[in-house]
Amino acid sequence: MKAVIFDCDGVLVDSEPLSEAAWTEGLARFGYRVADGDFGFCLGRNRRDIHAFFVTKHPLPGFDEFSAVIDEVIRPRLEAELRAFPDAVDTVQELALNGIPLAVASSSQRSDLDVKLDRAGLRRYFDVTIAGDEVAAGKPAPDLYLGAAAALGLAPSVCLAVEDSPAGADAADAAGMRVVTVGRDGRLVGGRPSVDRLDAGLIMTWLGLR
Image (cartoon, rainbow, N blue to C red):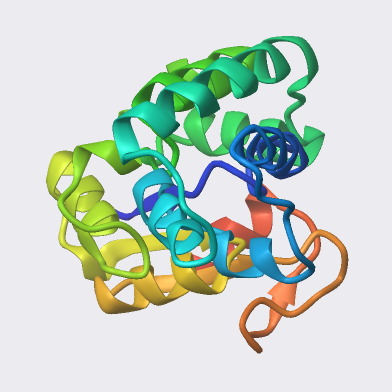
């Protein structure tokens, strides 16, 4: 049995612009103006690590207090504006119809991840979903991917990870998985060869099922 484990943000849903807007607003409340390049580090990382990054740049409240502010500003954006990538929806549905076990390993908080998957209409297709606040160490550590494989009852070596960030790709590599990277704007992800859209047939070929 082989499986596919997806990142969520930037792979399944177009949430990264919403997250950046929310962090920009949240940081501004405490007097920090986001600089060019700040979000390059943040791509693919969990909220606690992003908070720690910005603490090095500007005095901020502790994580719990600051996280509550991010919840306040991001939730209305997710509920009103979040959209799934159409190719991702088609791909997930086709893979599920072919009986391939599917999981999500996301740096998002559990509360945000559930909203994203529900808004995209995708949650029912996944056998396992693991969020960034449910593991000891976030990407690029392998914890999320190892946890997803374990919950599927499969060895990491038979899992294909689909990622859009260098941190996420490094996490899947560290877990011992094959990695496919998606650069929707045509970019390479961490210098890796990348596709610009998802396609179920191509994923099944990579899995050796076609």
